[in-house]
Image (cartoon, rainbow, N blue to C red; front, side, top):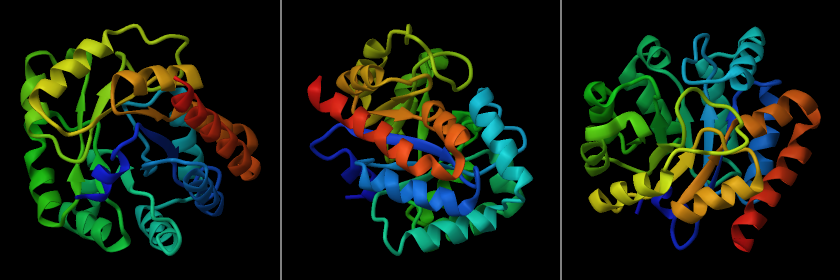
Length: 258
């Protein structure tokens, strides 16, 4: 069983997202450790990119701050290597095709394997164009994570049937960001996915409160929270680990209470 599959074993997974290098790499390391200590089941690490098309303003600004710090992909790999000395929670990269292309797809994936990354999410790679990434990921034992949105329409069944690791269910149209409510019919989307695969699915985009996280985890296999956490990091900077830990604890408690 893969480490990603273990993250969903007999429980609802809580999956936080952070942008590496915001406000600096040392703080990112401390945040990852605090996420793991506070009960995160799988951690998404964003590699900074100058044009993160799926991101709303909160995560976009985090990318800009990290890039202003001069953070490179190699810096992120080195950070993960160091984190793996103490952190055992599964970790996946969320970044963009250009980052992987410019680094070299095979070199990037090989480095993922060497430092202990378990999967990769590329939100700007359509299902029809995933093969060149997915084949190399398979060769190195890295799960290429599929995304399914309400607009995936007739492709939903096929995406689900070919999915690896877990499926990222996009809860709403548009870019990432906190929302007061999640209006799209996620329940029926999850039910359709489950008819086609046993691969677990987690819901992301727009989840900002413990109640929303619990609601999404209740109808799927887990919840992904990004902008709400990144906003805390932007506010508290080097002091963020403490406050991020508190948020994760509240989210997990909401899971158990629902």
